[in-house]
Image 1 (tube, rainbow, N blue to C red):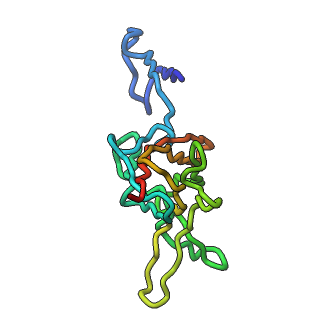
Image 2: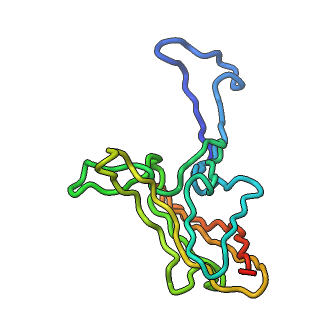
Length: 169
């Protein structure tokens, strides 16, 4: 969008009458830090065929458009609601949902997000993660993990991360 700013004076200080000093136009772009963010270049994950797996924030290196690291899985504990629940320390995130191309990561319907929890003994947050069960494969193959991220601005974007499924040999 374009913002046009003009005035005869600023708090009693008169601008010169020449238009080049009084009329200003600014072009601005409204960007969602999450929608316009990305996973680290070369991000790939590996799982063993026929076995359960778990992906954590440490494996899913995401950054906003300023290259600031963002934990896309819940990593905080919200005590402002009763009962307390898992939450994101980055309050720009509204929801995260996993999926895949051919159900090779959701064998037995197990591909899901596990929300953050509270460890009462250690008195700290247990970060959330993505869990699933890889399909059994005869040879190594690749499947795309889809991570759909919705932000508080109302934008939703799906990112695809390649996952290598290793055959049990």
